[in-house]
Amino acid sequence: MMILKKKIQSAIHSAKTTLIAGIDPDYEKIPQSLKSRFSNKTECVEAFCKAIIEKLSPVVCGFKFNLAFFEVLGPNAFDVLKNVLDAVPDNKLIIADAKRGDIGNTAKKYAEAFFDRLHCDFITVNPLMGFETIEPFLGDARKGVFCLTLTSNPGADDFLLKSTQNGETLAVSIAAGLNKMQRKTDTVIGMVTGATKTERLHPVLAAYPEAPLLIPGLGAQGGDISKLIKALEFHKGVAFPVISRAIIYASDGEDWQQKANEKAIAFKNELSPLYKA
Amino acid sequence: MMILKKKIQSAIHSAKTTLIAGIDPDYEKIPQSLKSRFSNKTECVEAFCKAIIEKLSPVVCGFKFNLAFFEVLGPNAFDVLKNVLDAVPDNKLIIADAKRGDIGNTAKKYAEAFFDRLHCDFITVNPLMGFETIEPFLGDARKGVFCLTLTSNPGADDFLLKSTQNGETLAVSIAAGLNKMQRKTDTVIGMVTGATKTERLHPVLAAYPEAPLLIPGLGAQGGDISKLIKALEFHKGVAFPVISRAIIYASDGEDWQQKANEKAIAFKNELSPLYKA
Image: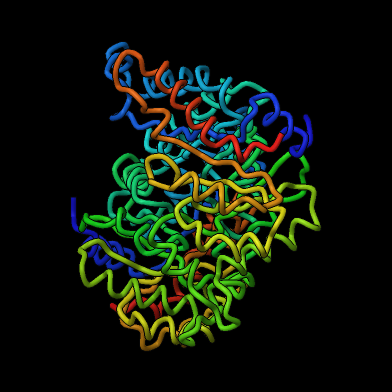
């Protein structure tokens, strides 16, 4: 297997974009024309994901899988997830949006679950319990983490944007800590930085200027693309914007696959300044 | 289904303890005498969990399931988990130690996955992205959350014990916020407070004096039971100590079930001051 830094470059260059499609397969939102072909809900969700992946693969550099939408399927959750992940072409990035965060022993099992069993390239992690909870995910140059740093929801004000006694926000402390960790490992360490707080992004990026960024919050969540592009103008790391619902549920008619593809192309074009060839 | 407050009372009184057994089914640690009866790893893990649950049920008031140890099983992860949960007697508390934390849409799916599909009583949640991420878990009096507040690992110093500008730690802000939330909902809102930081517990408990507490970190993690009992002397909420490895892997000989039972009884006795009849 390739080291992740090379896979990232190759994925970006072959698709000519850093756009990531977010796969949040909500049965309620799956187009009726597909639903009517399945009596089994779980099979329908799996077919939807596979069809979307096939149609979007030429247009995006990877896929982010939101674990909640698989776990809600019950006993088949990880079986469906595995089948869907197996349908992703080899040259696309796979990000497990699992936001796991726990102590050594347990974190090690999460790393094994997502890296070794499900063959994901990246997992999103939650650093609340401390930097030590990220370490069990490190050590393999073929893998990476995106660590929650500054999220795009209003609740980010509760903790991530709270100032600590040295005057910097928690988000900035996280960024600075990740920067330090990255210098000691070949595992790729990126940050999740939401798209709707662009005015608060500057000190976070300054604390880790080479960070790969995973940027949700565009599309359905209302982040402004031109503001985001401006905010990232001088950032040295690669920035992966993620668009989920606005692409995969672009139409609920019979043309849903085609419309998803067109919508992804439109976003790809709009986001092209983030693709630095 | 009973409201959770009643189920808690009944679970505690029938077992005469607040002790929770932590189920972290690590294949490597399963006794050889059981392993040799299975060619399939996943089936062995399932059998181990069911046997442990059967043997411990008379001695504990509930079980905490560490999701990582199920997810690492791969495609069958949630299938095994469901089968194991189905083996828990009705009058025992079921806590999904999943530490989920995400925004509304996604958190709603996690709530559905653990409460509605897997019939857990409690889920552990991670508040990093803000209090709004806890709200999707609220609304049902038959369910509850335990929110990470002050964990027992050294990394708690990185963020949870960092002081914010008003001089209180993040852990205290979390506790105060949860206290406010509890006043507006019938869903039980508890805190995860580790057993190894008893000297830091006081301001956290003061910020939420009636909080139900889930207390990992005893046993294998080295928390001191007598210090813990002292620290909780005046706390008004119920305290659930969790012991995992020290009970379920009490012996790797043929007597593993018997030894697990004996070890649980020993901890139950030692922890009896937390059971206020």
